[in-house]
Image (cartoon, rainbow, N blue to C red; front, side, top):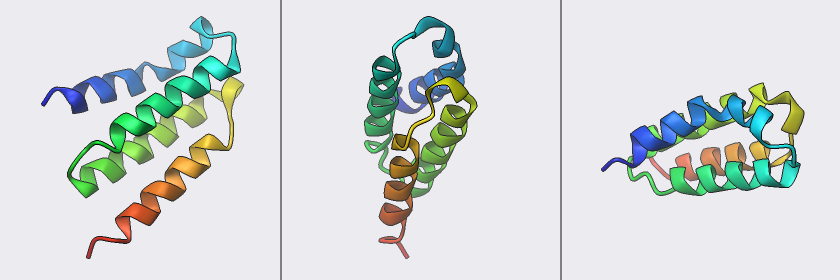
Amino acid sequence: RNLIPRIYLEMALLHCYEFVCDDKKEFVKLLSRLAFAIRGIGDPIIRLYAQCYLCRCAVKCKKFIDTNIVEDFSFAIAMFEDYP
């Protein structure tokens, strides 16, 4: 019930982790945790929007850009194609 607001709050503050995290592995771990939490959202349209927003917020963190963002977005599109 409180999953979606917590996820959006964490994604909105994602750019602050650039100053807190010095290690790229720690940032990738955070992105992975958020991506897996978003996969738990039941409504496919809300889930797709959240995954797009995660990609947008992660791209702003230029210090830690990686291919994980592209993989997560590809997964989102693939999952959305299952729905009419």
